Image (cartoon, rainbow, N blue to C red; front, side, top):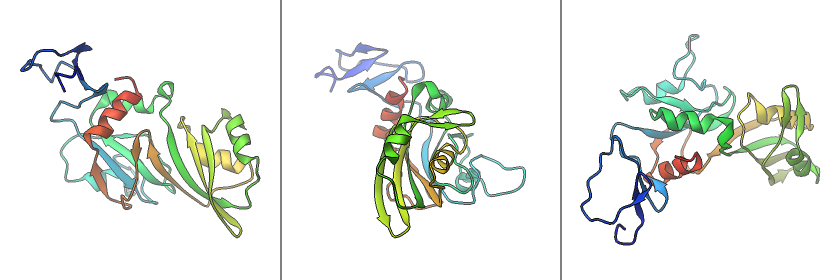
Length: 218
C-alpha cells in the first residue's frame, strides 16, 4: 500500500518503507480513510430496545444504555438519541471529537429510519416530505423517502434525514397524516444495523470507523 502511494501521514503521502509515526499525535489515512490508531478508543454499535432511555444513566432508574456496556471501564458517549419508544441503532464511543461532529447538524450525517404507519400511502407523500413539512420549530425536510411495504391498513416506509431534532420523524409523519405506530433507526451514516438483535452490542469494523471519520471530515 505504501509502494502504491495509498498511505498518508498528516496529509503527506508516505514514500519510505519503515517510516515511524506517533499514533498519539499523527493522523494516518489509507485510501483516503482515517485509521483509528489509539488503542484506548472504543467504537460500538447497539440496537437500543424499546423502553430504554438514550442516556448513559437515568435519575429515575429506568433502563439506560449503560446497562448494556456495564462490563466496560471506558467512559462512553452516546452519539445521538432515540426516544424511549423508538428502537434501533445508536453509536457509543469515547472518541469525543468524532462524537461531537457526528451529532453536529453542520456535518449533515444521514440517518435512515423504518416507520410503520397507518396506510394507504398517497403517491405524493415522498414529494411532500422532501419539499419540507412546517413544524412548530421550523421546516423539516426528508433527504429521501421510499415505500417498503403496504399491507391492508398499514404501511412500512423508509425515511432518511440528516438532522436530529427531538421526535423529528414522529412529528413530520404526524403532520402529514401518518402518525407513527412503530419506529426504528436502521442506519447512522455508513453504519448499518443489519442483523444486530435488540439489546446487543458489537464493535465497529475499521472500515466503518474510517467511513465515519470521512463523513465528518476527519
